[in-house]
Length: 359
Image 1 (tube, rainbow, N blue to C red):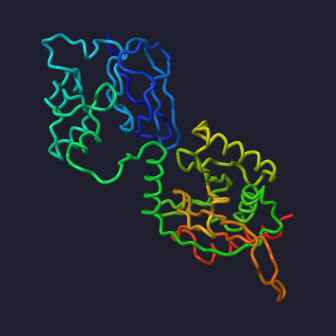
Image 2 (image 1 turned 90 degrees about the vertical axis):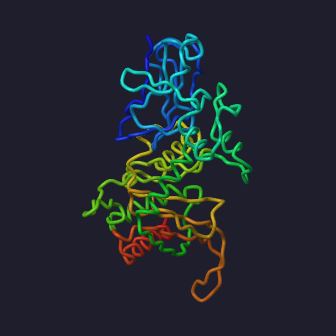
Image 3 (image 1 turned 60 degrees about the vertical axis):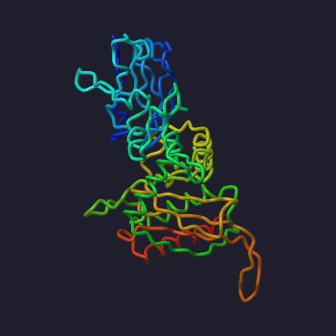
């Protein structure tokens, strides 16, 4: 008896997922609860166990494809596609109701619907190609290579990089953003504690300027009474923004420990889904790689983000004399639908004032 495993509802209102990595191959025997597939959502990567034991007879969605919840991903048990009776017309690539759909001539070339569509658009005969994908499948790259010379190396957007592209494009499209910038004297800040110190002073300052700790909800502004801040972390897979909870009630040392824990988990790819959602404001610091200042994109659906540029010794004028101080630039990018420029500037100056007076 064949078991068709469909992409399950992973919660949090998610309607689709990307097949990040198959943990099995066609023809492999697996037991119930054995690792089956990794699915990338807009929150995190989830490893899904097999709901049934048997032989993996058909994998229907290749790695890197985004499919909606309810899509049949793999068939476990039943008759392997390669061992069908001679009278059968080839492997089945689709099912309508309880009726199998006979494959087309191109389908017998072992290509996904997307690849067949690309081949049709480019006028490439799939049966003339030797597939370089798993089990001899024809990939989109095979088709494009056959259609003629291409310039440069093509690398499809996948995983975290695809999600970053979609998220940033949405934020840029929907949010009328403005950036305010001012310099700050960090001489009284322990730079080893820069990020947790900034988290603490931002929480204190947002109490005075609540419209920056808010949401834009169509015809209303939702003011949030919690201070859960996203902290941008660069990883080998791309930018990840884990959430530091209750920044208003934790000490700087407690915030430091939590930032370090989340950053380590982000780089290891072990963050839990709940550690990536629900932020109310975001802080980013590019560290040693930073330029003088940045104009970051607001982390939708938030309405503001604060960035710290490179802090370094620079000449400044104090009481009519040139002295050396640890100077860096603080920038606040904000949603102008919610936050007026003057209020954003006042918030930025409040943050700077607290940093310059830090013990």
